[in-house]
Image (tube, rainbow, N blue to C red; front, side):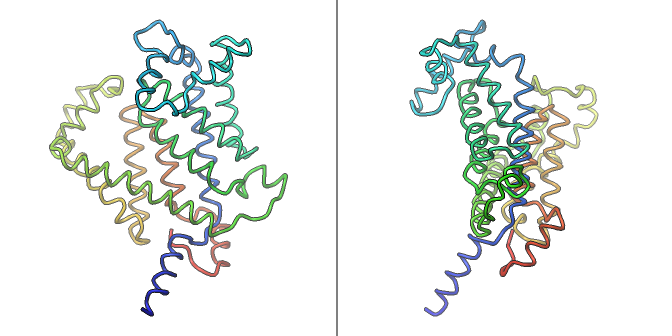
Length: 315
């Protein structure tokens, strides 16, 4: 029975480690830049993809109709368009305003201006766009939503933001910062573990055929097939490496002796995905999430802050 209070204290220390807000600044700046690049990449096709009655087979109304079969409470751009029509705005005007606000929220996060409001606005608008364009959205949208969700709930502003320098608020609670980082870390571990487990259950990643199919599938086939044929013997090795890297993530990322090499390998994997498949935004957001969650101490200020804390953070 005497061990129960000690065990309870260990659990509390693990779930609420004292942390500085450097990880939060990395997440804010990284997601701000991601939003800016995301919005700029869609500037020419935003209205085309999200128009209620598009010229193609897929349009926003169809996507939102399918979405309504799952739930009527998932945010969507149709809500904003309906609200805009009540005050006399055309659909194109509402969509343009939504794009400008999404870009503006990304710029605000990048600089740390109105950080909490910008994070909430960015999460809502991006979720609306991703759900309304569900037929053309992919993994990058899911992970942007996850990152923005944790950002808007975390103790903002961080000490690297303009908000902090202009208003000089009280310092954030180190234990609260540690709690949100720990939840974020657990979420990433669950994602990578089950992603790796799913890959291991099929034969396609063990024999390299899934790697081959990923690299030749339009619109990700940016490498000449002749080059791929020459290097086909490496595909099984690449597939096995990815499986082991992802399924081993929650076991090796926590250990201080293996964390750095695992983090480097995960980031290198995403860089490789970005280069070989042209999925640059996906690669960037995954690197941002990993570095924010498990990145080493990136500045002397972070090290000095940790040295003054009564308990050393397990991160």
